[in-house]
Amino acid sequence: MWENKEVSALLRLIDDPDDEVFDTVSEKILHYGKAIIPNLESLWEHTPDENVQERIEQLIHRVHYQDLQQEFLDWSQSRHPDILKGAILIAKYQFPDMNMPSLLSQFDQIRRNVWLELNNYLTPLEQVNVFNSILYNFYKLQGHELTEREPKYFFINQVMDGRQGNGYSIGILILALCEQLDIPVFAVDVPRQFIFAYVDTLYNFYSPDTDGIQQIQFFIDPMNGMVYTQKDVDAYLKKINATDRSHYFSPLTTKRVIIKMLEELCLCYRYNREDQRADEIQHLISILVTDKLS
Image 1 (cartoon, one colour):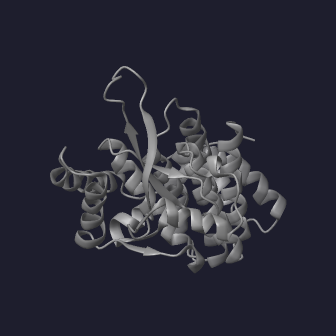
Image 2 (cartoon, one colour):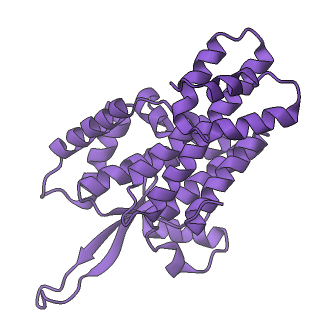
C-alpha cells in the first residue's frame, strides 16, 4: 500500500463532483499501477457513498485492465504463446484476483488422470474416448451453446471450479491437455464452428526417411466430445455453401484460437448491451493482431 502525501491527496479527490477533476485524478492514480489497488480497496471499505464506491470500482477495474493489456502484449510477442496462459489472461479480465495456484493444480490433476489412462497401444478414437470419459463422465463438464450469450462460460476458471463452460473454454482445456500429452489434436477453421481435428501422420514403410503425410482422422466437438467424420463435415460445408476446403482444414495457431475466443466473447457483451466491456475486449483483440499497445 502506498503511503505518501500525493496518494493521500488523490484519494481525497475521488469524490469531487467535477468530472474534469475526477478524470485528472484518475489518470494520475493509473500511473501508480497495481500497487495502489490496496489503497483503493481500503477507501472503498470506508466510503458510505455508493456513487463514490462505484467510482472506486471503476478505477480498480481500469488499473487491472491497464496491467492486463501489457500481459496480453507480452504473451502475443512470446516465441511460443501458451494456449492455457492465453485462456487465463481472458479469465483475468473478469476475475483479476482469481486463485492461480488452485487453477493450475486442478489442470495438472486432470492431466495426470488422463495420462494414467493412456498408453501407446490405443487407437486415435480410443484416445479421444479416454478424454471424453474423464472430462464429461468423471469431471462432469457441462458444455453450453454460444447462443446462450453468457460471457461467464468463456472463463477457464469457471470450467475448473464450476464444471461449466462452452466450446471455447472447454476446448482450450482440451487443447492444452493434448499439447502436454503429445496428442495430435488441433483446432481448425471450419466456418461458424469451433471444432478440432485429430491429425495423424502416415509414413511410407519402404521409405522411412521421407516426410510423413498428415491426414485428418476425424473431427471432435469440444463442447461434448462428439466425433464427426470427414463426410459429416463435408456435408455441413456444402449446406452452408462453403468452398475453400484447404483453408478450413488447416490447423489454427494458438494466437488465432485466442483471438476467435475473444471475438465471440465480444459478441456476447454486445448482445447483452455491455458496450464498454465489448469495447475493452475489442481493444485486447487489436493488441494481439497488431502486437502493440495503442
